[in-house]
Image 1: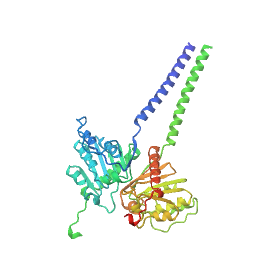
Image 2: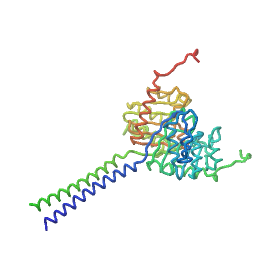
Image 3: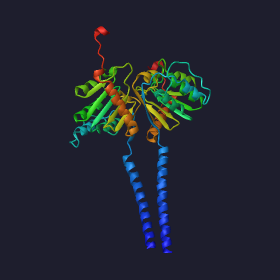
Image 4: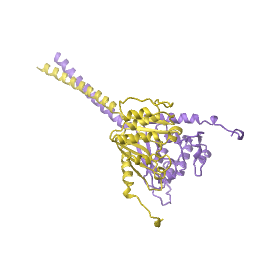
Length: 220
Length: 220
């Protein structure tokens, strides 16, 4: 009896050790699977055709109509940035000093039409300049708010579905994309995403049009 | 004998399970200890006195001479950024579109005097403007290289001791620090630090003065 008991205890202990090892392996695999996305994009990005990317996002699985333009259409920093943006399913917050890239403007409008809740914060001084996408976004029914401050609203970030932060030195302009030395970080670490979401909500509330000050000519 | 053998096996199995559990706890603790720094700073940062911080970095442990200025000297985004910079012991790479903040300029000169290897890359169009720190840094013997491109060298990052990346939307100007909406990320994740180090070395080599083109008037 005693021997049988000891044997049973040995068996149980071995089973416990095996279970602990299996749990550790599973936890490690889950951690690897859940490992947050960390990507760095550098610019300039060569001029490239993004029609196929935008068409696929407009009509997933639809018949591809090849674009006749001569631009290359391979993988580049702009196409990667576009793919990350177009992965939005529920929400997109954008906080940009300058936004004049037609390609990124079309992507944002496309997401809006697809039912993604898009909110844009931008800088008052820049938004009225020729080539700015802000007027087009507003015309499409997208909510845009701007500052009324002396300083610049100089952020350049976007948040996709409340879980992916896209931030860096890059303003969303063709000049910056094609000619400047720029960086963009794509990150899912909550330590970075959460403060930027909070910053967006803070600015969004502060720039609420009910807070805008309108001066009559007499007050000049 | 058989019973004693089973007992020994049970004991060994239990010891193995305990050792595995202890190893897992130690690994977790080590991972937590080694957890990379992740910090987000937002600006504007209120005008503040950084004399004490710079004095402490000049002469660690030296007698503190209180600054008579009336500015607050508490914790703020600028003081945190300064602290991170001043933690450099071996090397500091700086890649900045615009650098005119006297406080950050003094910190960089201080590190240079302390024997830290400082290298600066900047934008040609901006570096000659009034208030730029670039001339002072060069005068102090710090290596500076600039672009000769049509686009802007628009990065805004620094790397401390090859292990800490400081990057964001912030140009190192008093205007940006005190008036603009800006962000700075401080990060030690190798996935971010390594590509920025590589980008710096690429630009540093490309902007080597032996590659500068000098045109005579006849070639205009």
